[in-house]
Length: 268
Image: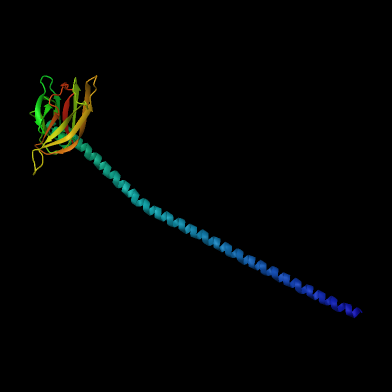
């Protein structure tokens, strides 16, 4: 009995010894691995710090290389500005001593070109004269005695109660008539006028007279007053004429300049 109890006890102690050795070996191995990992981490940190220092040094070198041309350019600019200032002062001294006539010529030569005013011509009704008749389209129309109210430039001229175009181009044409004391038995009871272009150059079977604008207004049967205004842009040739007619033989209109007028403005 004592011999049998000793055998198992020794085996148990041996197993515990082996287990202890295994645990000690595992602890030593884990510690070694931890030390090795820590060493690698510290080495990587040192390498990263070295790379950062190298990058910072490169940046400083590049910024220094860029600052040198900028500083040199600034110095060159200051030198040029100084030279320009000296030249300007020298030129000012020369201008002060220059003859006034030469200065005026110089100022005129350097003066900016002003835009030319647009040529225009406005004719107003002449209340000192009476209306008369003209034939148009095989019918008699009422014509108006005109007088020049406003004129600028040489592109438009007054000629025998019409506007003569001296320069071709685009024109804005406008007209107004004021009717007064008109009595008609026509059922439409309307009045109006037409603006005619009399062409200088006629090709083939073209008509020499072209109606550009037509204005029509209904008249009140009690108060026989009304105003008719029209206008538009047309292209005219040199030598063309503009005329205004009322397509009725005897029309009673106002011949005041602010009520009845015909004008043209050269646009281009």
